[in-house]
Length: 281
Image (tube, rainbow, N blue to C red):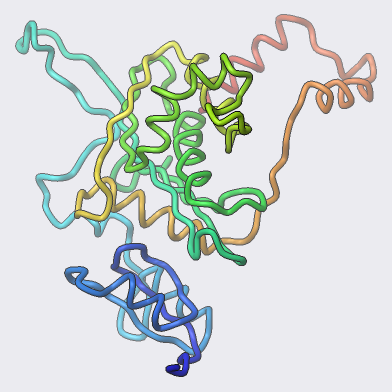
């Protein structure tokens, strides 16, 4: 049996960029993958820097470097010509590219990340560690869509979410109605996995005045927006662990019980606070 080489194997460009503990895992990501880029390091910090775009010969690169073709640049808000009247009518819409990843998915010590890409150097581009102990790829994919909805700059405009997760799209568009009818049980009479995330996803979409649509895009085939979201997700997976904070009616009730009379809001003040929160998203 071949001896496992010690160290950290960092894959910057491959089927699933990330850091791997064995050469065999690294090989799975780079074999027959065009223009793959990888390197072995003795420390985790060096491997993380390499994944982030930093090594001994290079300066840290901006995420915008994924665009090597000026024609592929995409603004966060696109103006889409109306089929009925291309001369006069345009429909404004928002486009978000989302992706989730899990390094060593399904194994002990997995690290998952979330990426949302709104546009080149857009201030709402997002790279985060997936909260909680369940660091799976599917949870990261769903959470990426949730974070796109939560950070969307305009809730009134139609929002198109481009994702390479068929699981997320099929769950929301096809499976969820039956899950709800069956009290969140599958056809096999088993509890639906990731119910907490799907409930949150459904609530956010229902609360939006603007329409939400999903578009499937294949991953790891060089599509600039998807590659940017994937890079953000992988960078997020390298961040520190984040706990899940669940806010329920009971936790809100408990918090309100500690309020004094001076802490309470009038209905007008509360409405103003809610409006301010929505406008800042």
